[in-house]
Image (cartoon, rainbow over all chains, first blue to last red; front, side, top):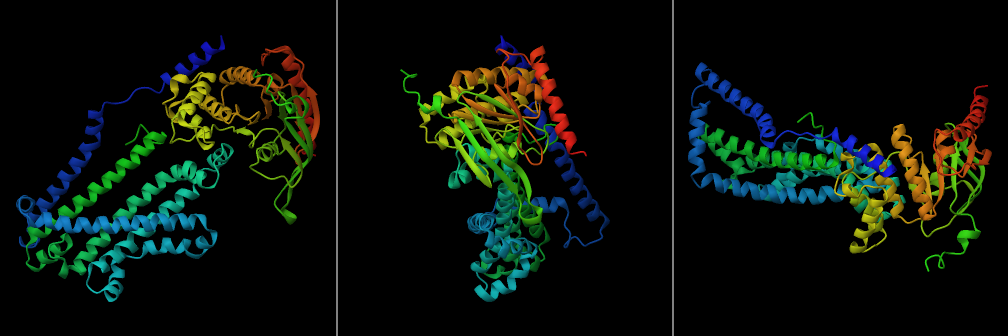
Amino acid sequence: MAVDTIQGLDALELAARAGDRSPARRFWSASWPKVAALALAVGIWQAVVWLKIKPEYALPSPLAVGKELWRQAHGSQLWEGLAITGRRAAVGYAASVVFGLVLGLAVARIKVLRAAIGSMITSLQTMPSIAWFPLAILLFQLSEQAIFFVVLLGATPSIANGVISGVDYVPPLLLRAGRNLGARNLALYRHVIAPAALPAIVAGLKQGWAFAWRSLMAGELIVGGLGHTALGAQLTYARELTDAPWLMSTMIVILAVGLVVDALFGAADRAIRTRWGVLDPAGA
Amino acid sequence: MTAAVLPQRATTAAAIALNGITKVHGRGSAAVLALDGLTLDVGPGEFVCIVGASGCGKSTLLSIVAGLDRATSGDLHVIGDGPPALMFQEPALFPWLTVAGNVGLPLRLHGVPRPERKDRVAELLAAVHLEEFAKRRPHELSGGMRQRVALARTLALHSPVLLMDEPFGALDAMTRDLLHDELERLCRQRGLSVLFVTHNVREAARLGDRLVLLSSRPGRVIHQRTIEIARPRRIDSPQVSAIAAEVTDRLRSEVGRHGR
């Protein structure tokens, strides 16, 4: 009777939604434009080198930089630098995440706090992190603390902002449904608000990472002297020694680290959106 | 044995008793009277449909009965332990949970242990014919299926009273007809008392034991009638159409009053 009709209708409505491309094809269609863009960039670089606008010691060829990168990858200096910088990034970012989440939640919940510092958090974000360094150096001298101070100031506002906008934009209907189903106070946060805010929080974490990484590089450049072989310090040494291939290969490593972490956040974001069904299957 | 322990009040008191419910939105010169001394009872196991044009305060009324909003004045009494279960026009499913997770959430929030929860969820999904879709996400389902998940989730609250705010308003006619049958069956089986708000007069005549017509701005009861058409009913039957036509006329003259 009616059950057959219901199940028939369900089957008909779901049948129209099937169909997906294979993972290999998806990978190919996502990666070839990136590879092409990279090839184009290297091509332009090589063309500029051939035009001899700048002397070879200032602008080395892609091949020279590639060789240097290969040599570096087989030495210890690069890996030591990565380890030092990576540890600083991890510590600074982890602290920013803790501060950002607590600050964001507090501002989202407490009206007075929002009126007092809500807009200040956003304006803090527009402050170039490098402009904090003179103050940081006065406060903490040329030390790691100065770097952490600036990383924290750079990344925390983004993360807090992500939390605030995530909590603000939880659909009121879901809140009503959650309350009716028996979620009060903490349970409402745990079962409705936090998961509903997750995409915005991940976006904030991603932006926070970008700010943290930039601040860290600025810090290592400026405070560099004590840093031995940190990546940012290596840039300064390379410039002082006019070792352009070293300089540029280090830059490539810095860029690559930023991209890899960014890609991890991108993957997390996509996983959430796929689960939620808000990823447009036609795009991306 | 189960029949013997049914609470006595179920046969004596009303399931929902509204007495002089008044709701004013806003304050001062901007104040709007949404509900004006609304008095209405829903008997145990009764299915009452509220019909009204825009601005009759239907959704406000349900929010008040569900405890999500407060009446400015008036008395409200609803049977059951917690606030009554409320179903919306949108399924309002949580996109981060599976179908089973959505249906199980109210049980989880009420401290039902996991093994028991699993059984109850399976039983509820079977009641709405979605047992095969337990592990799917809401976005993978059609609109009608999502609304059935929402119904199962609402039933999980185990409330003797069910409030429905135009739950089938966004569905196509065929799906809606099927869901009418399903809702009727589930309400009879579970002896639920239902307050069902709709702007669709036919739907009200198809489902209700009683039909209540509200005026607009402010909302108050202007007409009510019992519907004595034998069940099972069909939405396209002549009896349902006749009642719908009559109520539509009344609704039109009520709406026309605001044009003058």
